[in-house]
Image (cartoon, rainbow, N blue to C red; front, side):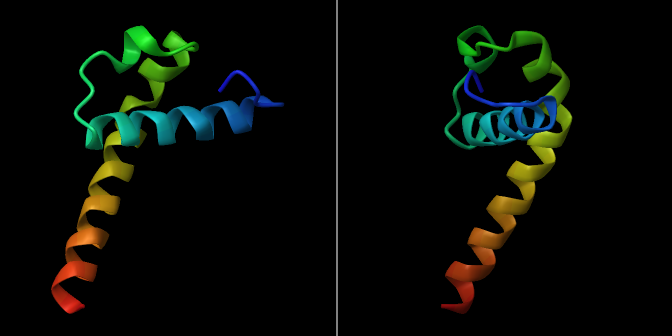
Length: 64
């Protein structure tokens, strides 16, 4: 997130950060984030991305 050039890239990085933190069950991801306010705003979209990723993994595992 620190190396993102523009705001759009920072938002995208925060959403992915939230999603991967939720998948990894990291409870302290907001405290560890360099962009705390943006991370808090990204939690709903990060949660949706987590659901999509988990569902795709389950579909892949059951089909394969």
